[in-house]
Each structure stands twice: as structure tokens, then as C-alpha cells.
Image (cartoon, rainbow, N blue to C red):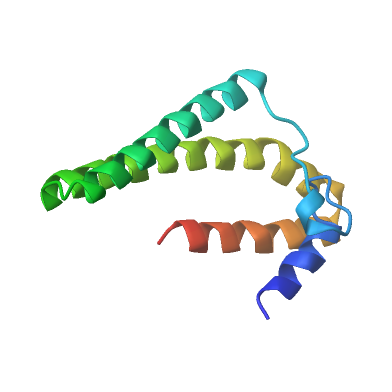
Length: 118
């Protein structure tokens, strides 16, 4: 039931999506920000592999949990950058496009804030 609004939103939002949700693209992405995010994500990938190794080696629980917190904060950092880009380009474009697109974007933003604010 939750996927129906997303599909409707894809057709109406300003993110360059037309129909197929999996084919949505951002309207614009700053190359430097994209590069920073990719580097962060590669670092996070390494941290996740390190966590797997720590668990395999029965490392001290508090140490594993500290590393988990580090990975979570790194992911939040990437998420903030993506949200800023989404607001600056995708949301602003949709809101300027007209009332139907704006309403769809407002719904999307509220949903994003709810899901990522937990």
C-alpha cells in the first residue's frame, strides 16, 4: 500500500521521473558533492567490512557498537548532503512547476522527513 503514493509522486515530481520510479534521476548534482559522497560511501563500505570482521573475531561489544555509531553518523552525513541537493534542485524545481507538482513534492518531503527523522 505504501508504494502507490511513491509511484504517483514519481509522475508528478520535479526530479525528472516520468512513470518508472527506478529510473528517477536528480535534476542536478554538484560534481564536487557527488565526489565527496562517493568517497564517503566507499569509506563506509570499508567500515562495514571492518564491522563484519570485528563480529567474526568476537571483539568487545562496546567497541563494535562504537564503530556502528561511526558508520551511522557517516551515513547521516551523506543523507544530509543528498537532502540539501534534493531541496536545492529537485524540490525547488517541482515547487516552481505548478500546484500539482508542488503538492506532490510537499508530500514527498514530509515523508522523507518522517522516515529519516527516526
